[in-house]
Image (cartoon, rainbow, N blue to C red):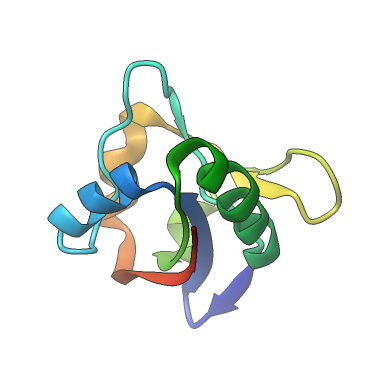
Length: 117
């Protein structure tokens, strides 16, 4: 987790369908979760995001993307860091019903930083 003057850099591995929805939202927000997706999981380590996009999204969706975005650090303090495996496998678990509020605290655009096919 990189902190720069009151924002924290997060990454999200994503497939082409979710990326299309982010594009429709002008690269400023994440789309609502589906009923079977009760939690939004941004990750705190770029290498972990790359691994998911490359090894999981490509296999399941034909392509995987890693996005990078900034969120107000004070706001993020409400979400404890979750260790989902090894030392660098760190996520934030944002309940689906809080995603609109989470999106309101994104600073700047969501950027695609890696693409795998």
